[in-house]
Figure 1: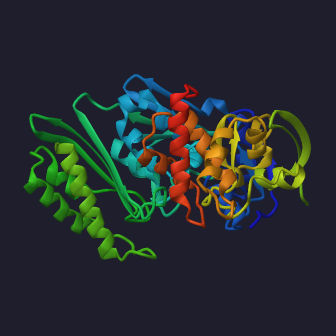
Figure 2: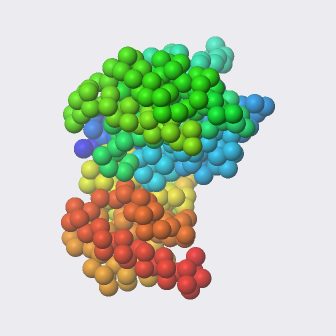
Length: 284
Length: 162
């Protein structure tokens, strides 16, 4: 199908983009990499009056270590994150997750910030940001503010972004020297949307896990932190008994939604399987 | 009312300027405005890979980029790669091994394969499969496609083209 017609603006600065957004409000849509927005336009699931193309805002692109945080600009492409030695060193979870996002031709184009702002329940970056305790940087004419990932993803395709705000970056605490991470997901075919996935990170010293973070994607309308499973593991050894306790705890806190192909019970089972594999990898 | 935007794109080395509607995606622009029909339109929502193009040296889905977004950029199509001789060995390998049947997916497959050959010269057969996973062949001729790419990868390594 072909998109219906829309207006188009290509601002040259963030200030200009914010001004356009404030003027047009919810009749406008922001175009970043377009890998979710353009399909929805082509399928006429979305018909904005105006597209504001952020493509020329190079100020929003890039990966940099700033003090103890890794800052990733909103317009940084998935492929750039996948290939970045800085990401591999300071946020290895992101490097592990990147190859699961669609296919190379889409990763060359899709953006980190676009994925966070879109907040697809099966997307990789929102779950990674939750697991890593990222803070999301958003800008508007009123200034800049930071939102913890735990408070940013609100509901299905809904975030804490106000209609006049633009997501400009995420700041991710750099991994500690004793930190380990694992990203796993199940999909029917390579590059398909995840049925369920898990982003896991913990510090491991003297055989014990600390600061355990387990975030799931594909199990609810938003990515979820599995707090009970995390508590079952915190401070203890990551042995078979602890992993079994964490898998049991998931039954008390995950209430997966069935999709076209998988029942809720299947999804819970798969979440437990992935958790078991992820924890075994953290312990190895 | 439809709005048109003056857009200049360097297509296969030649700059072209046209007024295009914002909603026209890049493949429709190339096919309908410039007559470059080598890139195919099929699913038009980024799933099949038949419209794969190279923009500023990287492959992308031509149906998931608007022509206006390509303003000021370099776009290479299968016609450009073919005429420049850049993929002559790949085309020969596809021919030799019957790696195309109906041929509909082939331009996109070749575009993706060339990026693999350029960026991942050390790729294993499994990695070739993974890299090519975004290009669907409804004739399901995948084995011959992977065989051909693997043969060219090995040949280019041997002749130092990689």
